[in-house]
Amino acid sequence: MEINEKVLLEETVEKIKSKKIKHILRIQQTELKAVDEFMYKKGITRMMPLMMAPITDTLNHSVEENELKYEGQDFDVMKSMIFHKQLALVNPELDSLYIVSPNIRLEKAERGDSRHLFEFSQVDFEFKNGNMDQVFSFMEELLTYVFSEVKANCKDDFEAIGVGTSHLDIVTPFKRYRTEDLREKYGEDFEEIASKESTQPFWLINHKREFYDAEDLNNMGTYLNYDLIWPMGYVEGLSGAEREYKYDRILVRMRELGVNEEAFRHYIELAKRGELVKSAGAGFGVERMTRFVCQQNEVSDVTVFCRKPGKGKYIF
Ligand code: ASN
Image (cartoon, rainbow, N blue to C red; front, side):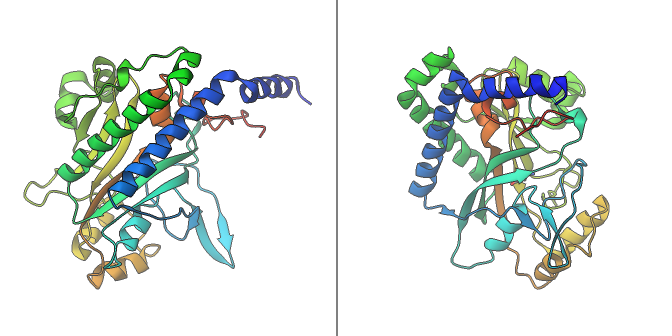
């Protein structure tokens, strides 16, 4: 065994045995329990996750690709269930759904920072006929509920990890900023700087992103998408959008972004038949939420097993 592997083994055992991680997991469990309760009360149907599929999120950055085959057919690991959310809503009985969805994005080593994991979970939800305002007020209500449950039920855990809870006293509605305005004010690192300067979560609207995020037809070049930014430097916690669902618009956006139409031929076919429905939704990262709630330096501080992008960090 190489010497650095020995160090790695000792560090890993230390993390597995750490008292802190037990309390962080308990707080995360309380968050997820509250999310389920909230979704249940709101009548949002829960779907179980898929972990591989012939099509998955095209993302707006490149990651390492893995070859996965089943019975000679190409599959990809699930990067997000965005298309499966849209497709499931084709069912006329279903108005809304959510998934606690494990995603794999084999991030390049340069994303070995405090905010990325190459394997993580997100709570992904979608509303038929939804729009941005609806998603914003839904999410603000959800966070108010989740944080109040965490504060009420995890006092001992916060004490054990030496973290207060005043950052969970959120004030809704959150402020909304346009990316171009913040970029003008703060430069390219606008998201991080604005997050550091803020004590409340805020919405960031209008990024040019994946083809499935709708462009505002009354205001071309404006996109009906949004991120929720955690304050105090914890940066992006959620992303979502009103969706493109019309055949011609999907093709325009796919061509603009150079998406492989052949791989998406069945999805395109359903769009052509007019089966896809208008929807809006979002997904928020579970570990990122836990990082913010537990005020940890790195998102990898809230997981037992290391999935921080980079080389040679993994033994289990
Ligand atoms: N879940 C996100 C959404 O609903 C997509 C993503 O994870 N990239 O838009």
